[in-house]
Image 1: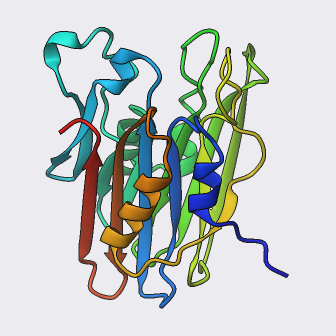
Image 2 (image 1 turned 180 degrees about the horizontal axis):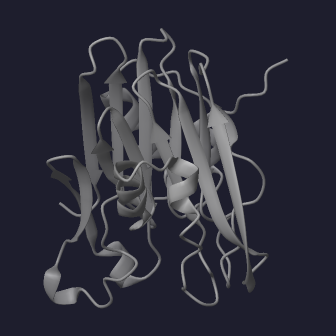
Length: 236
């Protein structure tokens, strides 16, 4: 029985999944796959691009003169620490990296954080980490159905991931006011692409044209440790 979903179909059916992380392995089992995208409804959120950094990527205002509040939109979504790659939807990337440097693990580091303080949405913080051998973990820190008095922490670990398979988590169930937080565990998805270019093209085409902002895809060779990345920005 097939349980995996086509990532492109999931994205095409949802006009506003918000920010999303998909982690997995290519069909030949030789490469780990990292996908991260951001979307935006406000002018401030849409005024962004991904730019490369020495250890990953960061968000940057496309037009600095139009930047309003940088607090929740300017951060480093992807960073390396040792042989691991961290990917998140906020500045908890730095929290996880600092935790790993202090001898903590992914879960311990995230216990110091909670959901975003963007009343009334209280956007979940979603995070992932990919290890050198391709094992990965995902997390979501969210409010209790929009009630900020309670934080719910969920962690999912995937050892010896199957070839051609991944898991996808995102911030919102869909559009709304307030925005409804993601529900359930990460969705199992197919990873049919053999190159990051093909992956990026398919995912970018599936994201809502009006709301999509930026996309990052990385394929990590599990044997050599080398990686190849693709960045797509709507603002160019």
